Length: 511
Image (cartoon, rainbow, N blue to C red; front, side, top):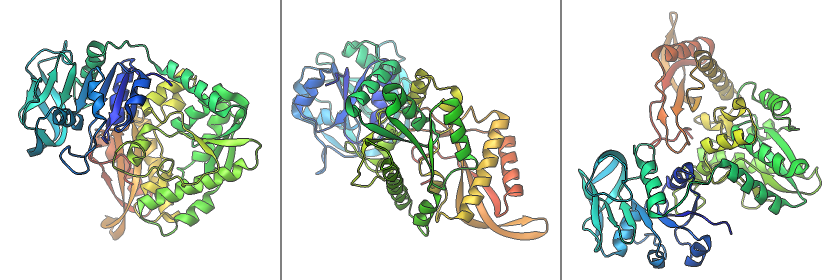
């Protein structure tokens, strides 16, 4: 069993994987386990420290999540974050109750006492709060380390035990010194060294793939996006001729997408590619479907059917590899206690019974880590830094029914958006950019005539991992040119709006 420097027990926070990721950025190997993992499994990992994540429950509620009480007796440093803080307080007989003033967003904390957590950090910091409960009294044996305007016990700890508790989330980017706090916990409280990197990750995953696959073959599903391209490259480096790379045209691609993918794999990656046109079956099954969850499940099931049918044409194919990331798993809520945000087609959208076993070597890492891994495997920057494009494609960028008319409108608008971003240099400055067909009509005027046509929403965001994002502050003249071109060049569109919501509370994709 692979050892871990830090174990993160997942109590259902949407940010749990970010905790592990921030530690890995510092070269510390962290691994996530369910909150109810056994002490035997914890000991087998030989961790140097434990982190208790946040979560949606309350420790005083009937549906509260509790880890084995023995976790607190392992003689290991422990850091409790949000729900993890409340759990630590509850274990040590402090009172946790609903907060009179709920906190969501940025807050300022004041460091009151030096500790391992705040070594070499400013006394005043901006942090990210997300809680509706509070600790009402200090647990016995603990002392206050930091306060905020609404929380006199914002951070408390027991230096002798090396137990620390935070009301805020250090793992999100909005906590300005959050990654430093996590690094300090690992370095000073847990005595971890910075030795883990993407090179070691690639080596470990290649060994795992060879060990699992043995002499069988793997069907690798690719879309042309960075995730599946990196999986294909990783498999090619690990098991070479045992990989069959397949691209499925589901009829939900952007203009020229199929041709671009075929060219990239042949000329850029040097990987043989089997292309399947399954657009008719996907579109037929999506006819008259408007619910986004149903769309995702239909697409996920149909993909598997197509891949399994292709697998029958080849000998000894027993595995299906796909570019699932941890963001997909978190939002689909298939581990731990997380609430489902949306079912990703390649996770929550998969059928219950499959003839092929899944291989998902990227399922514990984020997009920016995937890009680093891609460069490590020798992929060029054009492939690695391509904007994310979802597996369900344009189906989840059309509000309402997916049909040829709506797809045509969306493709034309999306092409214009990307052309303008590339020509102005903004494509490489942003994380993701796309159009959403709102299927909302409004009155307009073109020439001397009244129009009653559809609206397009432009969505452009800045992010590093996809778990949090802010809207991109595009110059007005760029937005104006995009709007002008879409309205003038796409018949049926008379209004363009710009999405200025961040994630959270919104997600990046609309469906």
